[in-house]
Image 1 (tube, rainbow, N blue to C red):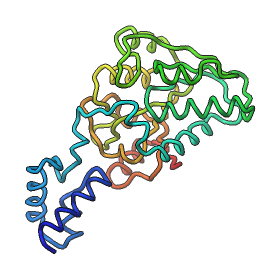
Image 2 (image 1 turned 180 degrees about the vertical axis):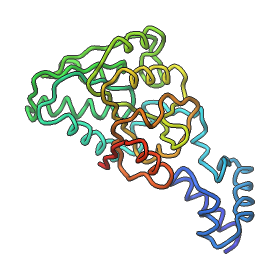
Image 3 (image 1 turned 45 degrees about the horizontal axis):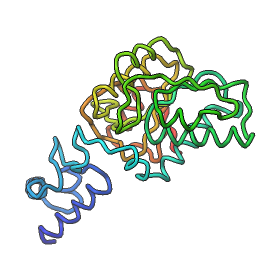
Length: 264
């Protein structure tokens, strides 16, 4: 195989998986690790990938890259819907108690599904109280039958439609929800849960600290990604709902941390 062909295949693997490892590529193509590193160096010079320890990642996985809410809504939409269904199922046939819904496109899908099922009378609980700092989630659940809604205010980031700031963090710190559904930008064995923005990270950190049960909603595209700010270790997670089973080191660390992994 010519170097150009191999580099094209490496580029395709990174585009689909988000990350590649030098050793795995060497085994896959039957070449030395030095050859793979030269391939990755060439791809990095062309601006297609970014080299990291042990391999390379997509340029879209830079630690500060953050897409808008509208852009993220269309990405992996099928996976997000499946994860949302599993999240609603986790609440049981008669959802009640207090639930915190974080900002994000997957948690927004949970809110939409929750509103639809309650409106259709499929789930009649003893009274579900939802708390959120997401303007999108609040808009979706406003007026939904069987749901009490509390919206936490603050400075609203236009990129995510989420309230942030010291007042938001302080308000969340006074809560003790039964379950928190938390969205992430990255799930890493070494770096834990991460997100690009420090203000959003502070809010997510407060949510994790306040909840009795922490449920992370993350499609497999978030695996092994490490964004700028880590807001919680994997040991803080009770349940991870995803669309594909984690592999390798991430799977091992999740197991060691006692995280229940549900594949939707």
